[in-house]
Amino acid sequence: MKISIIIPAYNEEKRIEKTIRTYHSFFSEKNILFNLIIVLNGCKDNTLTIVEQLQKELTPDTILIIDTPKAGKGLAIKTGFTQALAYDNDLIGFVDADMATSPEAFYDLILNIENNDGIIASRYMPGAQIFPTRPFYKRYGSRIIYEPFVWLLFRLSYYDLQCGAKLFKHAALETITPQLTVEQWAFDVELLYLCKKANYTIKEFPTVWNDQADSKLTLKAGLRMFKALFKVWRQHNL
Image (spheres, helix red, strand yellow):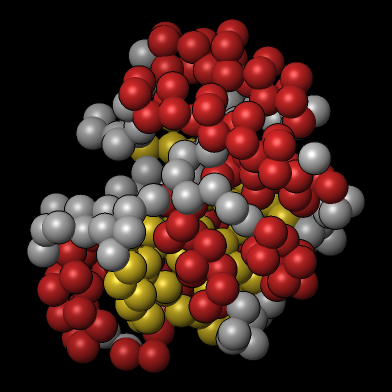
């Protein structure tokens, strides 16, 4: 088993070291060949210096750094996908830099992907756990407004579209990655929609999620996401 794990990072100087050390230690102990692809996107803080120091300290060939000047989670993950596809790996996935998904929870995706083309972590399906409990508006604002809108446009039905832990087989991403266009937060919907159009099977799996108080997803970003969803629909249906 060989796996590439992409970690997009935007101004993560306070959290990136713990995330890299924890993931590196966990997967070093497993019988898995792995690399961590850290994609910095538009960082204006000390994130790059921290990651470069970790690369020198830890096994150098297990940590790859890509520093892009432009911000955008979707852009960062597509850049990571493109790099990961150059390697002889079986699986390619991504996690958030804040370690809301622990390496143990990400490993659950590896163990449960089975014959599917991809597997996505879910915070809301039966069996999932969130610590601490999320505020009411975080879940039901999405459930009442965002998810019906996504269903209307894309006919995607998942408990959790946006969870920042997803894993795919190499062959599936070879097809999907060149078609990705979204550079910001609507990236997950475009990714899953393209998988649907290609008839790939994507499994949803309950996860353990450690909620982070300083999430970068704001109301303003959420409004921009709705605009991006229309753009995605036009891009892939007209």
